[in-house]
Length: 551
Image (tube, rainbow, N blue to C red; front, side, top):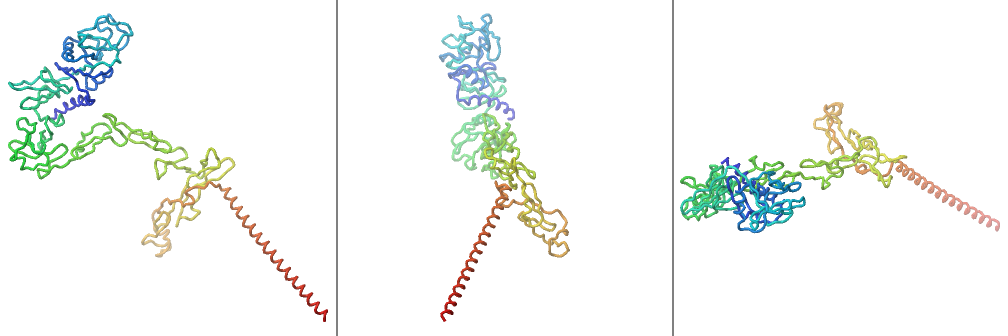
């Protein structure tokens, strides 16, 4: 069955072209060519595109045989139909047999000519040709944009099959990949199917011979009436719905199963087929027979690397089959998976670069990637001091990266790195870094919680005792870890160092003023108390003196 793969590709070309839903009104095959007529209104370009989508082109009438085929195809149709003759460039040439016209196959040769008399040879004349039964199939130029009744297509192929011989009382009906059906045919293209009645035996044309069904399940379900599956011996076989069995006379149609049929006793989960003189269970596509010989289990179709062969496709296993989907970062467009431009949705805060299947964010100068959100950026200095990021409309509204303090200068505002180690956040050693700091521990200690050092079990002091820091006694590299900045440094203040100094000076001045006022008030109260006491003493003295004088 490996040879049928080429046939599958051949059929796929026609089946994809027929996906538009337009079926031919009639068709005819002879030698290695087939011709079809479509009763579907459209202009010349649309007609040529539809023929091309089906693996052919607009019909060329280069011989008397082709002319006779026009009669076969259009004898029951009225209206004008496009053929594959047009004036590609320039003006008509009345001296030439084709008058400067050209077949869509880019061929200017022809053994047959059927121009209508009295045609206009001016450069403004019409440039596309049509035929009709009413005008005896004469070639009449039409405006290429005109919507005519339909068009005729032509297909070429190799390895044709001749018609099957029908015995007395039999008939054979043929179906072609182009979509038309007939009985009286001389030649058929590969992929054509035939049904011999009344036995309902089915055949398919392949490399000049007819293969009897069931054939490969990938092509028309192997010719089966219901479903086709590969049996345990890796051969295509037809099966029927529950309660029915495959007709042993043609191996493709289904008939009602008798109550005493051998398949009834097998209790097959999906299908039963005949193998020689016995019957056995089998499973549908995407399943395999379980060890009990009756049940069916899903298997991973994606194990076959041949599945989903297109670029940027991936295979997704589903129950009983598989699906071809696009890789992440790609989207389906027709039969292809094309890259999605993620940057169109502006996922990055600063710069976005689209890449195959993904995108990459980067930051402007003076910024770095936010470790908490890779698509965002934060201010970054990387030096001891750098120019602050200020509002262009307000130069006093400036911002600094985390771990930096803004300082106003004569011409601009700069960001100065804060020495977090001066705040003694670390339990033992501290190393200041630009915008942050790193805590480390002495040998024999382990950093816990990013700033606290805990003594290891069995550690010793520097003097050899069982307690102490253990520094210098346990060899090894100190454990380090960047510590989180404390809350005061997580959001730099917009107040400059000069402003801070001014606030401190004002505060000190206010405190001194309060002390001074309190001192003056206290001194004034003391003087008042002293004056009152003196006056009282004087009055007492005067009172005593008066008593003495009375005596």
